[in-house]
Figure 1 (cartoon, rainbow, N blue to C red):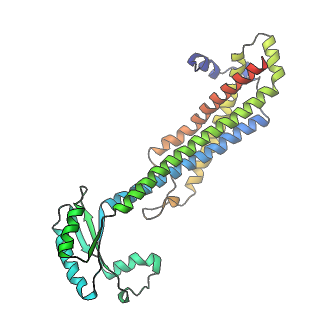
Figure 2: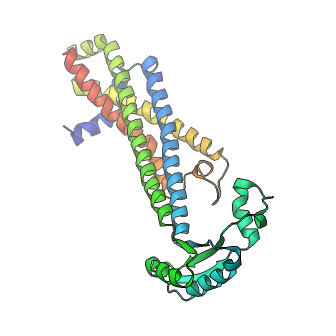
Figure 3: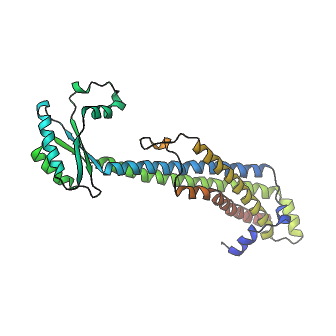
Length: 300
């Protein structure tokens, strides 16, 4: 059971008690390395989750405020159908602007897939109309009915089928990021527990002597708890700092790039980064306290 008073006693510095724990050795290196590696991975898991969420939110917002109308008609009817569709769109509540894309603009849209020298004039491509809507949007069902009557060759794409997968992907990526951080914390606790068990077992004779001279188990356990929590805190601090430096070495992204080139911490995300070292120390504290209680009970 959690006892705030005993926890405070364990955290209180005691130089004589801290001498019970060997300052160097395998357990010290294992604790430092585990905290370092897990904190480094936690920084990247957090950055990946936040960056993917930012990109998906940005794309979702952009798609939510725009729509596309496609005119698929014989060559002789494209101009007439386009004018009719533009008249309908410009008189529809919720639409700010609607304009037909030029040949150069449509070529630019296809350039990433087919190259800039695509002979677009020789291809039977549909005429695209870009629609900018208000924040409240428009009545898509009503607009489709009006277009069916006045411009039957027009096909409206309100991007709803694109927005929903992006929103779902953002939620799942955020969940995956936090699940990864939880697994990292669990792995850190497991490694610290193993190191503490090894240190306690290696000092079984020292513990027996301390008991003979009247030392209580809480006094003995506090020495191990403080030492291992400090080691984890130190390793996590270096791991977090290394992770931050590695993030700054990644090329900066832009609004047109994906989350792999926008892997950075922004805004309130830095709060979570700063909390990584103290949280690692807290995990090590409780893991060592649990291990010390179990081992000291077995050695009784």
